[in-house]
Length: 472
Image 1 (cartoon, one colour):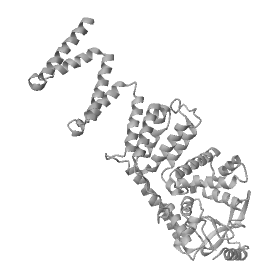
Image 2 (cartoon, helix red, strand yellow):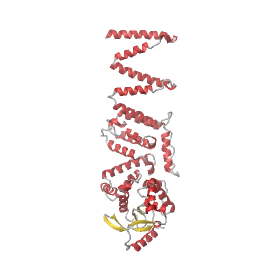
Image 3 (cartoon, one colour):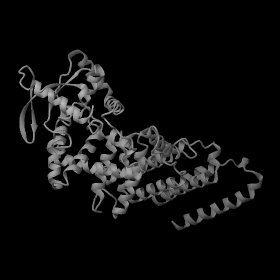
Image 4 (spheres, rainbow, N blue to C red):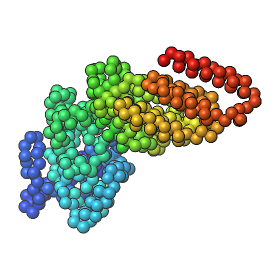
């Protein structure tokens, strides 16, 4: 059924039933006036879904980015929209379907005069699931979708983004919805006026709407960085991380924040953003709270708050990136692009598992997280020394890897650091430790080839001891 036929058939119902007194009346705000409108019973077959419905906006936009046309006037297009609507909130849809089967449609919908569903796409989907020959209770707007797009956008947003409905939405949808409205309004009114309008329509403060728009801008930049432009499904399960990253960027750009390390520049913030993008790719491979270690809170709580820690962390990160194999090309013709891109991101993560069982990205994160902890405990040496001792005890010194020259060199360096600190603070303790070591030598087990060398060294020890005793 094409547009002209739908307009004609819906108008026939209005003319036939406009004087009926047994039909419901319902109030709506239309063109800044509260109006009482009659609720008509419109056959479901006269209606088409709104493919840009706020509940599934990220899905339809992503599909269209793949050049997958969605013609809602066809059976294929209708079935696709119904699938997306069902999958948008399966548990809630199952409950509502049971309610519809028992009590029928409880909440009135809104349609245009050409049958586009403005409010009630999910309800119509469930009614169709129950009986495609049934009816949809709806107010009929006096315009088509094309005749007054801004007012229809306002009406749709007001109804669909109300407090009760928000619970049923994918979190990413509200950011995309705010951007869509902003882009429609700004050619006609100022940015300030647009934000105020969106605030009124979505029932949020103007500050919250600015946060939505700022966050969506970072989301778009992330997708562009990965060459996933417009594939909004790749933002799923990342809302908290994007909110954090957006806050960091707004805080740090301008080179004046006290929450960053001294002397940082906007170039350092650019690097923070790119590294954060890399960690966002494998969000499901680690606890999302770990993401906060990059830059969340005051300067003593994160990597970006300490110059040495940040330089070490970012340097290691860039080294890991350089050692990764070249990524496979993106197949935008994939039958399931979302699955294809998720697999590509997973491969990016798995490729960083070089020789160990752990990703080098996560090792780098954990290593520097400990450094932040050490900084916090700098004034509690007992705690840090106990932790260092326990860590060394956990090393399997009998393992062949412990005998590697590089490992032994690090052990020697560690020992030197300990002796140097003791020497500066307590020479007596150093001498006590030397005596204990000397007393522990089993003379009868000294190899024959080392006897002469040991004799020379013990004479040298005597000379040094004599000089110390003489000088004090």
